[in-house]
Length: 122
Image (cartoon, rainbow, N blue to C red; front, side, top):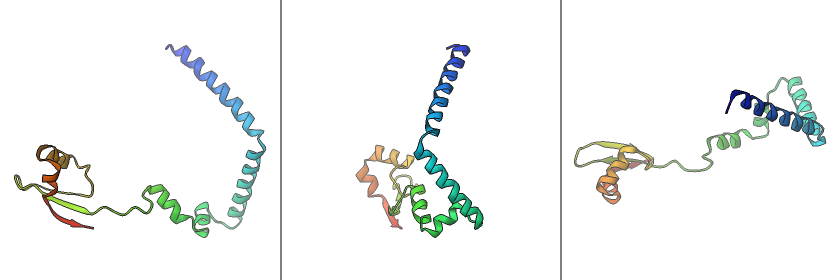
């Protein structure tokens, strides 16, 4: 695609986005939400507070932290220590996605490698 064609394509996209923005700005729901946001920001400024202070006040900080981490209430996996009896190599992992552990399982079989677990801890 030529640079001129790319330019015209981007120009058309910009025109469409400008039209969409104009329509959105006329939407009464958007106006209402923007007004609410401005009022809340004015109250926060008046009391010298931040949005994160609001989250703490309303108890939203903990749920926001779990949402960011994506872990929720999931428990931590146990640490498994594998010792290869042929080479005396040691692997410590909390999951099965360890590269060398996968190689061991491919070479010796999953059941055999699982029998090499010498220690499990939290």
